[in-house]
Image (cartoon, rainbow, N blue to C red; front, side, top):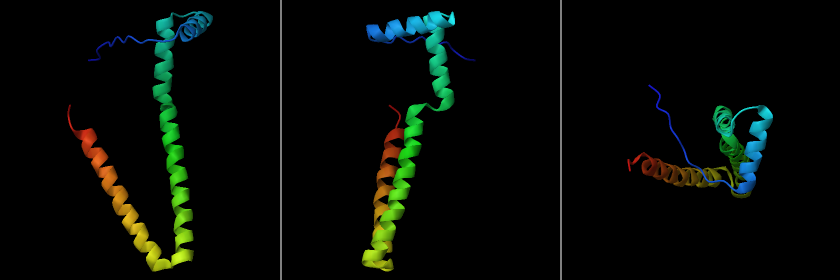
Length: 105
């Protein structure tokens, strides 16, 4: 069973006016307009998800470029050693972040 959730938000007077105008243009209430905006954002994944995907792609490309440069500069074995060390460090940071998120408040 779905429970209704009522939220109270604070917005600047300019934002409130824009919301009222857009809702009026669409012939709906401000609350209906805000609900549609939130639901649409959740369906699309929101800008944060898009930015996270972009950040991941940039990080992967940078990592591949760095691996090639290190291999050229230091040799394959030394570059692999540094890559393994970095992966271990990153894994530790990620595991700690996941542990912190999984703790119930």
